[in-house]
Length: 571
Ligand SMILES: Cc1ncc(COP(=O)(O)O)c(C=O)c1O
Ligand SMILES: N[C@@H](CCOP(=O)(O)O)C(=O)O
Image 1: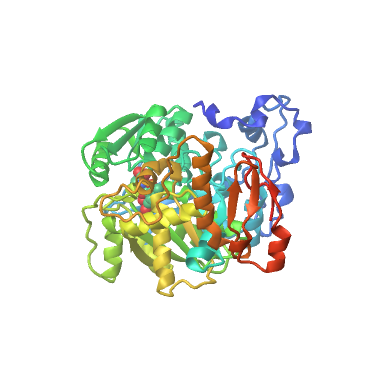
Image 2: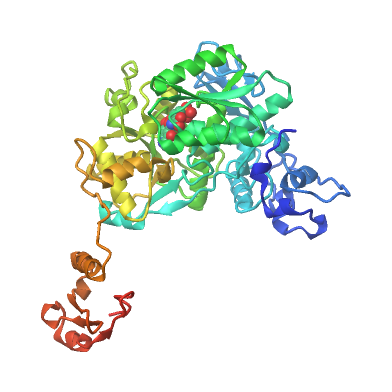
């Protein structure tokens, strides 16, 4: 069996436990806590009675076999095909196939009739019951929706880092200060195992590969073209499962933090002198010739994992539907994945509508935006993508263009673009309110600013911006911005560090200036201060106080000042 012990370090794996003394959360809770509302056979929780105590959470899951996935199934069908003709062409998920007979995209089609045997409340309760547990594999935000993802895979084949369940962050200060919005949220998909939303899809794809290899299917390795995040996720999940990974990277076009990820995880890294679109073309040709399984989002398995972020957003809002969801787009798989997640929730009765979707592109790599502006009707034209700080979406010929157009049309969606100036300023402003976002999230926020300014998104609209990667992967762009060192870009919100001599007086001087510059933010306490160094007293200078005289009197007393604690007195 392939080893994935790297991802199994949980308290449960440290020592064998007596099954009778298990914490309730590790017990099979499915059939006991969820009442089946259907007339069909309820899922069973057949626990096998082994005399051996479980050694880890995988063993534990195997013993209890809590899954009821055998009620459900999924297959590949041509994307957006006429339902009658798709019956003629379909493939088992155990086949190695990425394209339909006509060369079009595929989609994973679930047996919706079987899923509909259970009503919306049933699914909501089931998914909610799995949050925050370590039960294998449901501790993952993706696999907690296993029945809707890969229903037929054996839990034992799953390769997971317990990805998903990412923070839905209330952007209170950013929303109020920059957008006059009260209900702005950021779904931090980049706070994840390899630092981007790609983990959500990659756990599914690598798990299926793990299964295929156990079935002796001809898969020697897994490969992708990448702008840095897909390659990081692929190499990590493959390394966890002991599967060789091969990544095609456009030379000198991805961040150092991204480059080091597959190297550290032992992938075979090819740095190729072309752009992402060139790498994508090559990996497609190579995977048609060699037993290398294709891991890009052309492979619709990936999107099954990525769609769970949409389900999670609904879950985190207690199944209330936001008005808008804004997603940065490059190869354009993710925007469709979000649509699919929301749409399944509606179709299966968990919610009664879906949000409007916005896809945000960098103006330097904007083929979808141009297509949208042309009214969708013209034939789609790929572009040559120019350099952008949002380097992971520097893509001119997106493989999922048809999926994206479909998702946007069905969700009454919008496409916006952001210039380099707009995306970098939006990122800097967001960071100044306590976030640390990636430039792609800057693109999404810049799109939001435009839609707010046009009055399309309202002040009280509940809006979710999808943050797709961790800011720490893109520190060079932030360093350049805050060093005011970007040609043709006004770094308006740059906050460079101040060089200061190592003596008390110099430090105090710069601090006084700094505090004075901040006075305006605290109108109730517009107090100028002067420091009397010899006496180590802080004296409030009454002449410069902008407050009521009685308040001045009250404050006009020496305050003990320690050199290390300038403002240890609350005023
Ligand atoms: C950080 C980041 N954001 C956004 C995207 C865009 O996602 P998609 O290619 O699915 O449109 C990507 C990859 O393309 C990415 O790596
Ligand atoms: N940003 C992506 C580009 C490839 O997208 P994919 O979803 O088709 O794999 C990356 O990080 O490589």
